[in-house]
Amino acid sequence: MNVTLPPDYKPSEKEDFMSPMMLEYFRQKLLRWRAELLSESNETLQHLQEGGVLEPDIADRASIETDRSLELRTRDRARKLIGKIDEALNRIDDGSYGYCEETSEPISVRRLEARPIATLSIEAQERHERMEKTHRDD
Image (cartoon, rainbow, N blue to C red; front, top):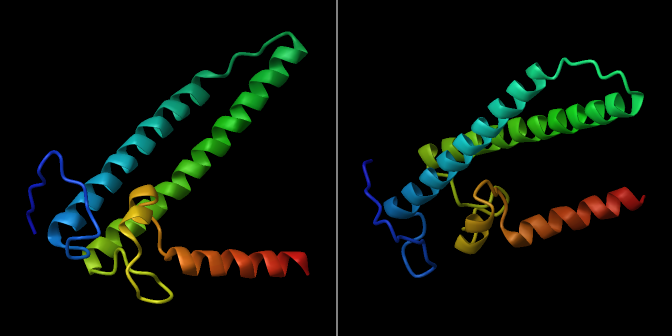
């Protein structure tokens, strides 16, 4: 499927849900986000590899270790996000993108704009969060 998007295209609730143009819009959005995360991840990796300097001052060393720990956590979060982006791209390929995993109902375009890796509709997500909260309080 080869769809060319107009530069000002924005998906709307008025058009057919997951039309070829809408799918291409979200595919490009996901690919841009993925590229951005990979670029940031590579910068973090370079920075971590450069950071072998031993600071004589213990406070400076502690500060550097804290920074490295934060960078590693950020990199891990990016890695997990890239995995979710890849899953979303696979859903675009197999035709299930944009539909709630629980109800099979369309996920709103506004929700997908805000969170293109969403797999649940707002209602299903809220149900999940209520269930988690209930089980956490036990």
